Image (cartoon, rainbow, N blue to C red; front, side, top):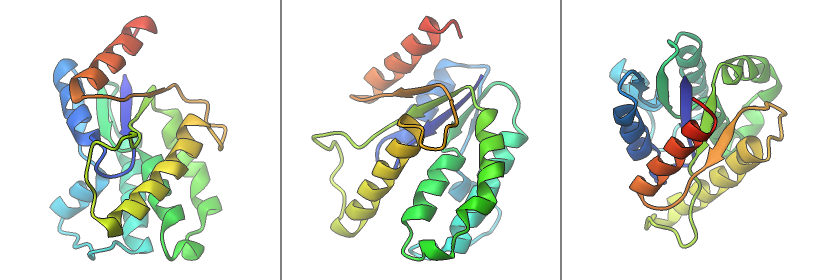
Amino acid sequence: MRIAISGSHLVGKTTLAEALAEALPRHELVPEPYYLLEEDGHEFAEMPSIEDFELQLERSIQCVQESGTDVVFDRCPLDILGYLVTHRDADAFQLENWMPRVREAVAKLDLIVFVPIEDPDRVAVPRPQARLRSDVDMVLRDMIVDDTYGLEIDVITVAGTPGARLREVAAHLRDTGR
């Protein structure tokens, strides 16, 4: 089963992805594209550029396309789209050129676990990051939960402590026979 953990930054995605991969021992954990690119030697600016995010999107698509059947992804192509469409230079991003490849990659996922910003927020975020984090969260809710692109993917939204989130995912997998 290919499971993507999705959400804005500083919401607990990586914690959940790691816990889920540990709970599903046959599953490989694929780190988020940002870290994979850093491992390859790419140096990001303090605030990544459109080109940096396009590289991340390319890597995210590649990871999904080349993955095995039992994988937990820390982020999926939709996450990167969330950052691209909220970027200060978003006008330079050609969404329509990327959507066919994004659709194809997302269609290979069996489940997206959306981790939203909670109210009250569990994380104290510095003011400059808080606005971007909130904007990305809203865009991801639209794309993933409200399915504005008609991707028709199985989605679960989780909340609470890391343990509660893991239990929600486990219950969803059990209830859907996966």
